[in-house]
Length: 173
Length: 126
Image (cartoon, rainbow over the protein chains, first blue to last red):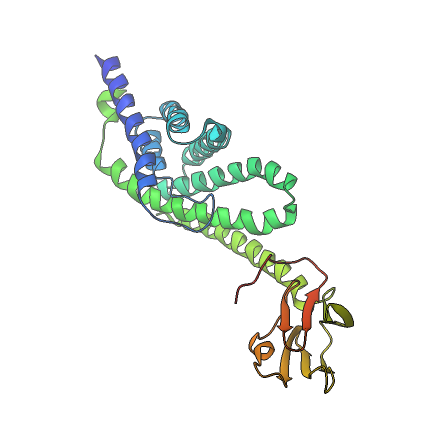
């Protein structure tokens, strides 16, 4: 019985995480900077990380990335999204585990690390395309870091409400 | 939000802001001095003058028969201040300061073009 519930919850949360990514694509906010997006799905991931644990968050975020990658974006972009997701989740887990910070810092650091990871991967492509390392370090990096903080804080605001109001973990684990 | 959150995120944000500031300063610097850019002047397709863009200068171009234009090079930009042509189009074309930009005086068969450096854009539509 417990296991059935567990599977059902995981499926529900995975669906929510996938849909949040889709909902975000529907909102016509153009942030003007290529590569910067809100990353609403991170709300769901944060919620799972706090209410369940790292293992569940890892499973859901990786599955979400695979599903989104195959349905909405091209599988060629998977290398960006999977690495960004995995690194940001691990960073978030470490910062959460340190115990010194709240959801806000955890989420913002997740956003930062997600963007930096993608930048590192994109960096190989951009360096070949002729953009200087200095330009990447003094323009793309700070812009993406700031964007990561801002979007991370926004997500934390929503995730914070969810974590406070929904408590599922007691009868789950 | 905890106090430690604000300290951590504030520090990171500040570092990013400083890096961005440095980046913007570096990017602006090379465009500022106009070195490597030259004002090239052509009449009837033949070049008859070339002047560095970063040295202020006032030139009287042409004669009574060819038509007269006054070209001013100032603050790393060039413009025609006076002309005795009927249309005055060359004056109305305004300032040029980037590689590839041109001022053309059709009645006097005069083309003033900035050359050298990296062309910043293919075409400027005015």
